[in-house]
Structure formats: C-alpha cells, structure tokens
Image (tube, rainbow, N blue to C red; front, side):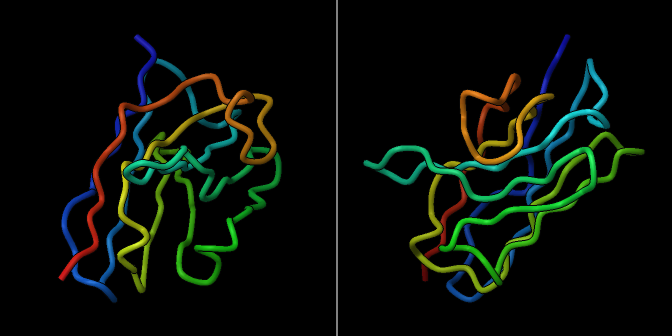
Amino acid sequence: QVQLVESGGGLVQPGGSLRLSCRASGFTLDYYAIGWFRQAPGKEREGVSCIRSSDGSTDYSDSVKGRFTISRDNDKNTAYLQMNSLKPEDTGIYYCAAGVWAYGLVEIDYDYWGQGIQVTVSS
C-alpha cells in the first residue's frame, strides 16, 4: 500500500523549532521529488519547499527561506522539514507529497500525499 506519513508536528512557541518527518511506504522515494505544503486556517494550501530527486536541489517559498531546511534520507525512505525561528503565521496543517515528475511546488505534479499534520505556533 502506497503511503506517506507525516510526524513531528505539535505546539511550539514563537521562535522555536520543529522537525517534520515524512516516511514513505509501498514505494521508493529515490526517484521522487518531495514537496512540503501547508494550509493555514481559512487560506488555500501553499507550497513551502521541495527537494528534487535528480540532483537534490531545493526550492523554498519566500516566507520560509532562511528559516526552513528540507532534506531527504533515501536509505530511510524519509524526507524532513527542519523549521526554525517559527512564527505564528507558520501555523497550519503541513502535508508532504511525492511526485516522480514534480520539479517545483505545483500541486498537480505530485502523485502521492500524506494525511497532513498540525503545526501550531503560539505563546
């Protein structure tokens, strides 16, 4: 069964850090680009970051650049999103996605999606 499962979310104070994990099962992440997306309350889902399978290059949205770092460990079939200097506006449900032809943060390019995990940044 093809599945992506996110973990590592929760409640954190402004300025704090969290590391999200995205573990794949039923397929090998090696050949897939991985994207992280988020949806804040009352807003549309937006792309946060992606990492490509071909060369490991990465993209970040302007809102998280310099604070978030995406990475992958193909041996563990897992991708990560390290989130530092978190702000209240980072609050939302975070989704990881995998796409064999994905290159950027276009949702339609991603084949598989996790169920999402809540991140809340609040004092």
